Image (tube, rainbow, N blue to C red):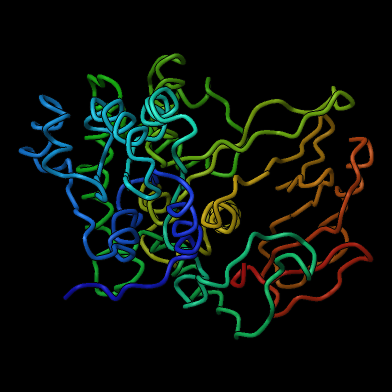
Length: 409
C-alpha cells in the first residue's frame, strides 16, 4: 500500500523557484523524498525519467542530445549525478528557449553534482537541499513551518499542541526521518536501515571513491555515529576505525557529499582568537545514527549514554530543516572557547547572534544558559536566546532567554 503523502515545507519555495529559474535542482540524501515531492508537484505534460534506469542512463551518457530529444522539457530527470554529460546540453537548451521551470533535476551526491552544476548552469539554476521529514511535516504542519529564531515573532513555535511524552519523543528520534520508516510504524526499522547502509551508502561510496575495504568503511561509519554532537577529532576517529587519518578525512567528505553528516563550524571573528577551531560532527538522521550505534529500542536509547547527544543531534537537524526547506542556508555555528565554555548553537542573522542551548531536562534553570554571557567578547550584538529542553510549554527563563519544548521545534 502506498504511503500517504504529507505536504512538505519546501513545496512553496520549489514552486516559486520554478517560476523564476529555468532549472530547479533538489539535492539530498537518498530516500528523503526528493522525487516524491517533485512528482507531487508535477503538472500535466511534464515528462519523468530516472537515470536509475540503465537504458535511460546509457542513452544520457552516450548521446545526451538525443536523450533531450526523447525527453524534451518540461521534464523531471531523477538522479542527474549519474550523467553529468547532460548538463552542457541542458544549458544550451535553456539558453535557447528561456522557459522558466523547463528542467527539474534531483541528485543524491551533493559535492560532485554541485561542481558540475556551478560550471554548467551558473545563474540558471535554483538549488534546494532536502532533508528527511521534519517534526512539523509529520504533524501535518509542514506548510506553516518557518525558520527558527528565539523570538516569538520570528519562529519560536507556539504551544498549540500537546508536547510529546519522553517515550514518544525518543521513539521519533529512534525511528528517524526517512519517509518510508517515519510514516509507517509497521516498517521494520532495523531491516530498513540495514538495507539502506548496504544498498545506498555503499553504492554511493563506490561512486565517489574506491573503497577497497567495505568493513573498514562500516567501522568508520559507526565511529562517526558514536561521535555525533561531539567535536571532530580526525586522529581519534581514524584510530577507532583502524584507518589512516587522510583516509578518514576523505571518507568524511564522502559522508558529507551523500547527505549523511553535517559539520557545524565554530563561530569566528577577529576578536575571538581563543576559540576552538574544530567543527562538530552531526548525523542528519537520528534513526540511522541510533541504528549504527546499535540501540535496540527507544527506551534503551533514552536511558543510555548517548541520550543527550542524540537529542541535540535531532534538534539541530530539525532546525536545519526549518531553514533548508524554506530555501535558506542555515546561518548556524557553535561557540566553544579554550576555557571550556560552550554554546550548542549560534544563529547569526542580520548582524546579531542568537544563542541556543539543548538540554535533556524538564526542570531548567538559569545555570543551564550561563555560558550565554561569554558572547559579550565576540563584539557582535547578542539577541534573545533559547533553551530547548523537555518542558511542556515555552516560558521565560531569564530576561533574555525562553525555554522551548523540544517536541515542538
